[in-house]
Amino acid sequence: EGMTMGVTKKRGMLIASKSVVHGDEHHTPAVSKYHLDSLEEIHTPNPGDRFTLGDDEIVITPAIHSDSTTIGFRLKTRFGDISYIPDTQYFDELKKWHGGARVMVVAITRPKDMRIPNHLCTEDVVYLLKELENKPELLIMNHIGMKMHFANPYKEAKFIENVTGVKTLVAKEGFRITVGKEIRLKTLRPARGI
Picture (cartoon, rainbow, N blue to C red):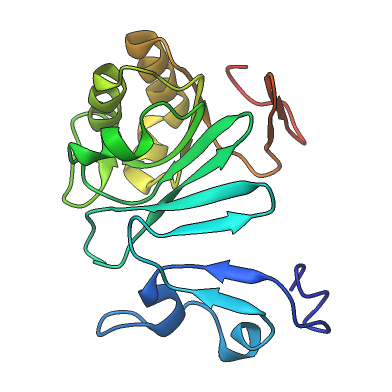
């Protein structure tokens, strides 16, 4: 509604997985027809598809998840890339699609020693980071699951940072990351571990 000024102006673009827009045998659509009708463009892309966003380019990346249409992305900017890894199990191609990004936002739902199918845990992310030739400057943990919550995501973030050398933070409401020559983080309230 923010992009369409309270659904008063038809504008904007939505890039989302097929299940988010259309639903499937296990999921109802996550965006209402009312909201979809307010958009100028709706895309349900496949991995490898590319879109231009102003001066930047977004590349759709694959995932292995119980929802086979799950996608991630890599935003290519003149100041470096920002990658988003959604719910997925670890697979070797993550290195190809996300390696070299300056910032990685990763859905890490499970802590150490609590791996489940189709989701990343702390060890998976440590392994991925150790395998990368060009590590990110910053990793943001998001989509924290209940097991991760009770295990203390800040301790898991510190573990990732200590083992890999990659600055790791837990996402919070109000985080604003600016990627320029430097990467700057602002938050509405003090963030732990900064």
